[in-house]
Length: 121
Image (cartoon, rainbow, N blue to C red; front, side, top):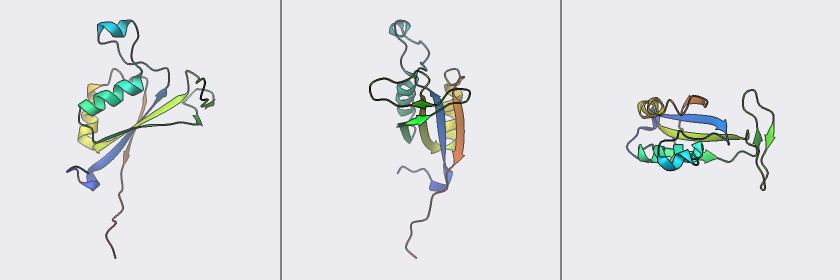
């Protein structure tokens, strides 16, 4: 782990449908905007976020949506995705502020992390 204190860690969970797309920022994006999940993973890495995990969702629903089940051959456009970012609160708040326009339709939860002491008794 980096120099981040274990007590300073928070997790941000971003919930959005599989159909969510990133803002069109380059010429080629006007032809096909990148998937929001992969775009956010890329910019999180570039921002130096300590950890980013795109969780596989077998089944679930987002607020106001119907229940969706993952299928290997076809996935519903409203199927939920969850991207989890872990770092210091200030770092994640800055990231969320910087990408606020892309996160307008994303449900964002910030969770304090309690990490157990694994020191022998």
